[in-house]
Length: 295
Image: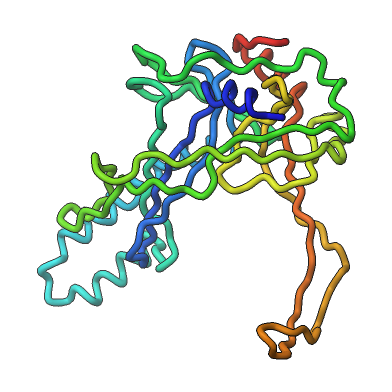
């Protein structure tokens, strides 16, 4: 049903690969999110929480760089163990504190000097403009549904994104005490489509209708990915998943497993994806004078 649509959507939907390091962690944490381009001028749409993570990365990295510079001054001091505790308190570093974040914008543009940001004041929606590129590494662009009111309960739609990150082209450089992207390892993660039925709509007094609820979850890594129909026309953007308690709870239920009686406890939930409605996306693009296309 969505075979041709997925091929079309994939031409302008791209992953953002992210690596993070905690102060007490010995392993790097890979993650991913999604953007999709809305024109041939380097404008893309994603979630506000994705854009804010990118925007805050420099502050987090600079904070650690300042700590590292001060730490290097006391490495040979006989009172190092005492002094380092003081530095950790000064910089508010705990074992689970994130100290470094780096991003890789896979197959988006050849190069860039940075971004121009447009972040929605209330919705989980943002526009990214890639600045000073010379060549696009995506083809085509999103075509948004012209009449968003045609999206009804029972309609089957599909999302595309990049959950379950499999990329491994990163390392920790112990000499420089830094995390780095490398030219070796796996540099891509497979795209992952997930279909679902429109169940309900999201709205409030402030925004009116602004979102679409789906019968299946949006997966981590699909945040910022497009929601589209069987023709590849964009109807929205995945931004979160809600978890509703079903009430089908089991406590100390005896079941037979491998010929042995086991007691299990299970609390059941349904996981429903939430997407920004196409009307809200188009309104935000219009407000910021960003060219987009409809069909």
